[in-house]
Length: 263
Image (cartoon, rainbow, N blue to C red; front, side, top):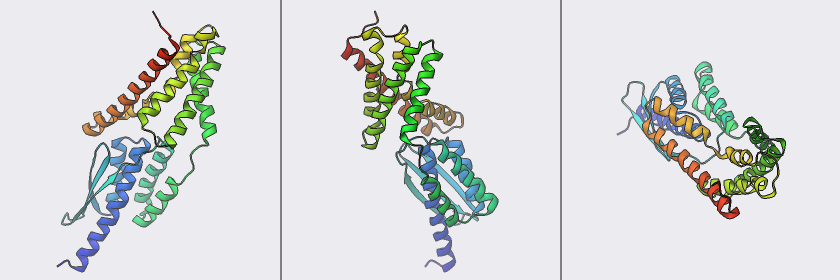
């Protein structure tokens, strides 16, 4: 028979496990490295007089919490949500972890703050379109592109990223999203070849799809590898490679449609 005190301990562990599991899953989906997730989780668990252990799988996070004397434990599995990289969320959730330890926040207080953080509105999609287009046009200039090529890259990037946003909202598979977006951007940026616009059409074509390069998953995979999180590292690396392959296929499809040959 479970004693009242034991029941209270189990309920406390269950509540904390649910919160920490969701907290870790949101951090991971937002682009946090595994070492950051680990530090944040251990900091909060320590404040609540618990011992935490966790494992990150390709689609799920397993959280196990132990009472202070390690006589009781509770484990939960949380599915990692699908979402775009959001370093603002990563920053605020990391601050929440430090604030929990410094201000001695309860689980309920931390949950309320996390709900507010995840409820923040993202940057306006039109502003993101403009900034991404400007960034890719800047890359074109950095690699020696002329003003005409920069304008072509800006239009191609904005169009490709717009399609990426819309298809992602419609829950398309991320590989198909990358392929279609890369193909559209490459077709538009090939106008320099087709119509003879600009003096550096090859630079425009090469830089028009850079917005799809999965730099953050690649860097996070290396970080996880360095810190010994091999399964997580492999998972992120495979996802980044799938995006890269899809991007390459989109380019090849554009070359096939326009009959562009480089030999």
